[in-house]
Image (cartoon, rainbow over all chains, first blue to last red; front, side):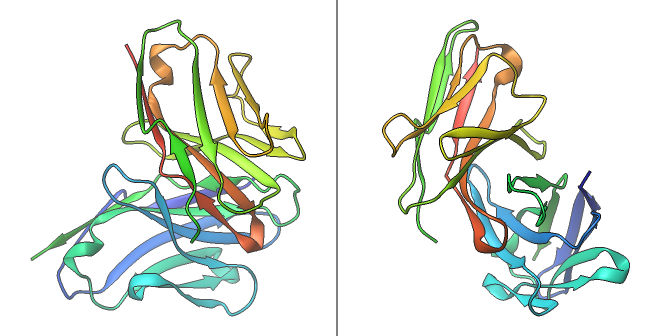
Length: 115
Length: 112
């Protein structure tokens, strides 16, 4: 069965500092991988997705993530944090071999950005 | 991303009452999903729906839950007899795999 582990339920960075949110997955075959952001009392917005093209994926708002098969990881990074980046971030995996297409989400990481 | 409309945005209901949550996709999709998020917790898969049938459901999706797409447009989630523990944010979504997924803005259900 697929699973997603996000290391660190809470990450705090200073404005302008590097953001690194960790995600590891478990899957028998390389899955589709996604990062979503959720602002307070709002829905889920797609940041970026990995679908087997380039292993370094660029998303919105300056975020990017690198798929590393050997490490079964898909960590999210941003070179310079902005106050508006404060939100909940979810890593998710979808089985590319199944036909239901469901997403399995990690526990989420709350990103705090300090001035 | 195209917008997915969910109604109502917030619903308060008495325990034991039936609720119907609605989702209106903007563009044509084949795969539909419902997820829920209990306050402060992760997003959990409830059910996937393809070709007017349930294709997969989680253990959360018991006999109290049902889904349908009655008019080929609205996609609904019905909870027959709500319990306190059904209080959560419910999201509908559509899409598949490499094409990505679009989520609705959610319905906050509060059972009192």
